[in-house]
Image (cartoon, rainbow, N blue to C red; front, side, top):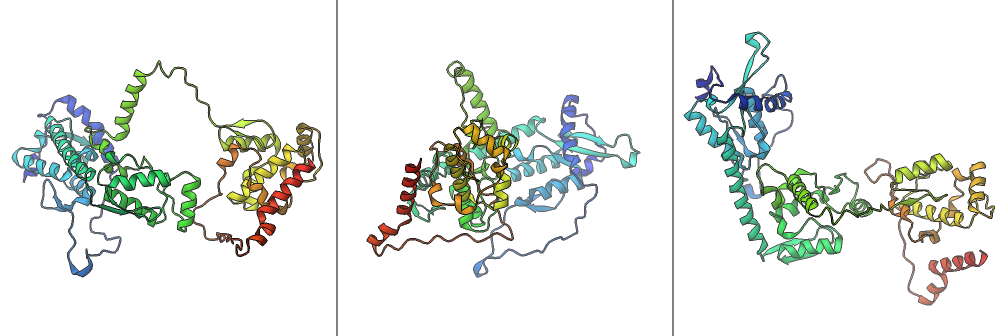
Length: 463
């Protein structure tokens, strides 16, 4: 066993600067290790692999321990790493950057059988000030060793070639068949047809087809999240599909979370450079672009979209700042009113448009007193505290206030329900009943739209 050859570990085969450079990595790994482990505990029910018809399920390839006969499924590589740290005191640095973990382990299993471990690993002694029996020697294998770095680069290049070949096959594949996640429309032919459809018809863009690999698996992962009623961007779980759809539409969450590492393997950019994620590659490209175009963009000025206060001309670039201003300057606490009255998205729209119209007409929305100027109105409402209370719901919860008072009212675009996530005592949605169109003549006379037009005309004539 190669482990017996290193019972007296030594670092004489490594340069001092290599040992110094690898110490911080070992400390980071050892810091998260538990002081004691119990390998024999079973904390959850176990089940054997099975499939319909009694056919055995193909399992992941096994990965052996570098030092002993223990083997682990490739999908459980963290268990193997934990085993080698606890039982054999070996730490492998930056495992996430190893493109082919199994080939990497098999290479070093062969090399450790040929030469002592101290020829390749730096030796770090922990608890050096403690008594000799309490001291431990750990071995760190990392890319500071030229052979290890060369191996990692070769595995990366091999993986890149395989990914590019797979992507090339998918690019020209005409047997693709899948269903849209949003409208259940079927698509056959090339994957680009489906991806372009979702981007164009549903504003769901996961990137250019030529930048994606393993498309079938990618779509299956996304479909699985939607089937679990999980938002693809914020990853919250909802009570039903309609609530999820409304949430993703209102919050503009019809996109994936770029910070979710689960999606990295489906994009070619993550395989291009050894040891670099797409964020690092993209940031380098952005820096080069900015260096080249610095003079061309020097006069660029960003003008953020601002929402305007309901009672004055004050503007803010976030709703939080605007709500704080209305509370401190006018005594109108919009989030509190929304919560106390249980206002949904559409009721908030009607309330904002109602208040906008009343303030535009210089009329107090509580006592209906009219003033000559907006300043006089606001002074009256603040003095009498009329600004802090809403009139009867029937006054403002009217269909006519679905229409914005100001066509460029940005505040309407920032409104949202209090919380769309699952709660135990959520009320049922109000059903929408369509008008009877069996008699078009009668409908024209009694339609709610006709009533709205009459009310709007009377309001215009009055003022």
